[in-house]
Image 1 (cartoon, rainbow, N blue to C red):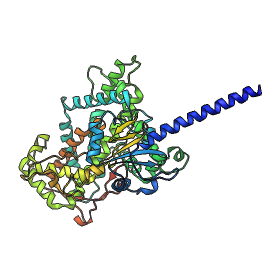
Image 2 (tube, rainbow, N blue to C red; image 1 turned 90 degrees about the vertical axis):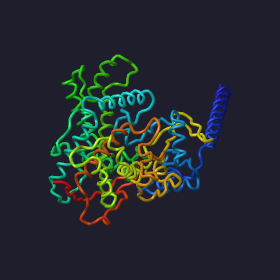
Image 3 (spheres, helix red, strand yellow; image 1 turned 30 degrees about the horizontal axis):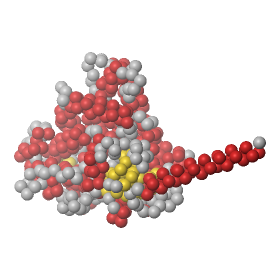
Image 4 (cartoon, helix red, strand yellow; image 1 turned 120 degrees about the vertical axis):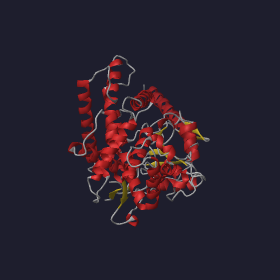
Length: 497
C-alpha cells in the first residue's frame, strides 16, 4: 500500500512538473515575442516611471527608447502602447478586427455594472453599436433632425448669455446645459430648462465624475481596484454620483414604458424598448433592461462632458488669440450674417473657421490615451505577439502632436488645416475621436454641435476676460484620462443690437 502511495505521489509530482514546464515554455515563448519596454518593479510595474499628472507624456518619452510599440506594466496589468500615427492606424484600421476589443476598465465596469455599449465586447457590442448608430442616424434624418435641435439649443444658449449683460460669468454650466440638451432630445425626447435645479445637480455630478476619473486617484482605482474598494477615498463619492445619474436614467425609462406607443417611437429609449419587446423570447438577444440602462448612461455621460469641455476650451483659445477670433467673425459675418442660424452647409464656405475648430480639437487633445482596447485573443502585430488579456493603449496624444504629421505640433496653428490657397484641408492624423471599429459613436453629432454652437456664439458675441489674453492658460487643469480645461470667468459682449 505504501509503495502504491509513493508511486502515485511520484506520478503526480512528475505530472505537476511537466505541467509547470509546459506553462513556463508557453509563457517564455509568449513573453519573448512581446514588444520591448522598460524593466518594471514587483507589484507596481512601471508606475514609478510615469508622471501621475500626465502619464501619456511619460509613455511618449519611453517610446523614444523602446520604439512605437512598447510594453509597460501598470501595476499587475500588462499594457501594450501604440505610439504615432502609423502604429495607431495600422492597428485600429488595418487590423481592425484584431484590435476591436475594449479594455475592462475597472472604474467603468463598476459604473456600468458590465453592461452597455462602451465597455462591451463580442456579440453584445456588435448588436448595441449597430442599433445605436442606426437609431441616431434615423433621428438625425427625421422630421426634426439633429441640426435643427442644435440650432434651437444654440438660440437658447445665446439668449441666456445675453441675459448676463456683458458681466463676467463662468460659461461651464451654460455650455453643459446646451450640449446635454441635444443628447437629451435624442435619448429622452425632451430638453431641460437652464433653471432646472435637478438637471444642474446631474450635470455637476457628470462633471465631477470626469474630473475624478482624470485625477491620479481615479487612475489608481483602475490599477488596484480590489485594494481601493477597501480604502476610504474620493472614489466612493464618485460612484455615489454615478448612481444619481443612473437613478435619473431609470426614472426616464420608467416614464417611457408607461407612455410608449410602439407605432410612433419618440427617441432612442422608445426604439430600444420596441426592440426589447420584439426580441424578448430570443436567447441570444442583447436588448434587455440592463443594457438599456447602461447604454443610455453611456450616451448621456459621453454626450455631455466631452463636447461641452471642448467648446469651453475653444472660448479660452479665442480669448487667448483675439486676432483669430476677429478673423473668424469677419468670415462668419460674410457668409451667415447677423440674423439666421448657421447650418452645416455653411462649413464649406467658412474654411478658416473650420480650420480653427479642427485645430482646437487637435491642440486640446481631449482624451490623450483614448479608451483602452483589449486583446481578446493572441494578436500578431509588427512581428510581435500581444498575448490575450493585454490592455492596449492607442496613444492619441502621440498622433495629434507628431512632428512628422504636423508643421508645428506644440503650437496652436490653424494653418495645419489650410492649403496654400486658404482652402480647408484635412490631415489623416486628425484622430480626436480615435479610429476603426471602436471610434466614438457620437462623432458626427459632436462635430455638428461644435460647429453650430461656436459659430452661433461668435456671430452673437465677442469674448474676452478681465485679466486679458495673457491671463489665459491653455494647459489642462487635469490631465490623465481626459485633458480637462481650466475654468475662467469670461465676458461676452453682444455684437448686434
